[in-house]
Length: 181
Image (cartoon, rainbow, N blue to C red):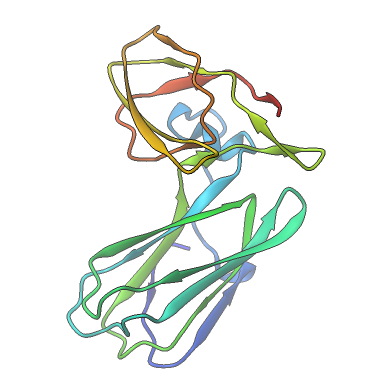
């Protein structure tokens, strides 16, 4: 789904409403999308004064590891200009429900951000590290809830075992495939 206007009534979108372009199989910038790795939902709330209801919610439903999952994200202010980043992993998103907003002046854009650790046989897998592909920073999160920014250069091996890679990383990297926890 590229973008939808705010509505002054509750609204729900299902899979037939999602019209975002699929990532090409040969595009390294979007390799996480085509490799089957789970990701986190992100909602960009466009800037428009007074169009949003503070503390209203957006609920995404879908699947992760063959199970139904959902996540509720809360709009903070009435003027937009915010990004809501989820913490629930999704393999697919099948629906998005938005509580009523003030008017049709605002807009939401939905997508995926970063990548997470897949599960196998009901257990999270652990990455065996990563190798920097260029100079920059890789923003990671761990199973214990802590996060870190790891500086890297091309060819540097990092034996870290993060559970999450954030999309705001400034360097590309190659992951070592995860092993069972």
